[in-house]
Image (tube, rainbow, N blue to C red; front, side, top):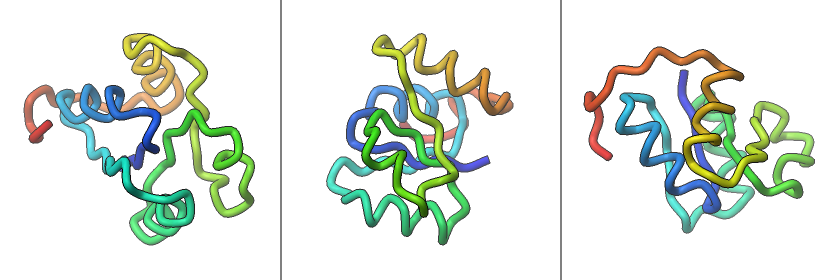
Length: 91
C-alpha cells in the first residue's frame, strides 16, 4: 500500500516511513499535484485539509482528525492495517 501525505502531515509521513511504509511527502506540492500523483501512482491521500478531501478526484483519501502524531498513526493503521517493516526505508 502506498500513501501520499499533504503538507499538514509531515511528522506523520516521517513516522510512517520509519515504520517501513511507502509515503510520498513534499510540502511544496499543491492540492492538484497531490491528486495527480495519487491517481498516477495509486496512492492513498492522507490529509487534514477538508477542502482537498472534498474534491471528487480525491476520493481515495483518509481524513486525519487527530492532532498528536501517535493518534494520527493509530488512525492510519486502524483504517488500512498496513504491515510495518521498521527502519527498512529512509526517513
